[in-house]
Length: 73
Image 1 (cartoon, rainbow, N blue to C red):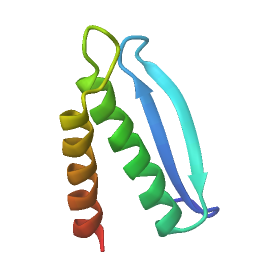
Image 2: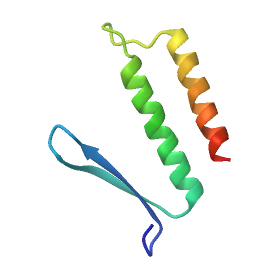
Image 3: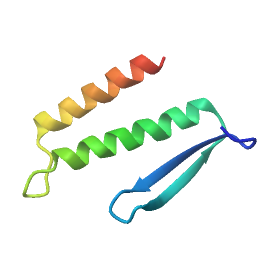
Image 4: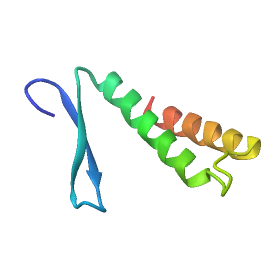
């Protein structure tokens, strides 16, 4: 937390440096940013060799996101 809000930082482990940042005015905005990052990470992991996400994987990702959101409520 900063005097201007909440900061979400992105780390690039390959380059060993910060890759991005986002300033969030409220905890709710920070929650949404983190949920989007979490979802993107799961989608990245689920992409098949053809570059697609299967329907089953998308359903699993949606369920995981919902479970994570419920824990944050």
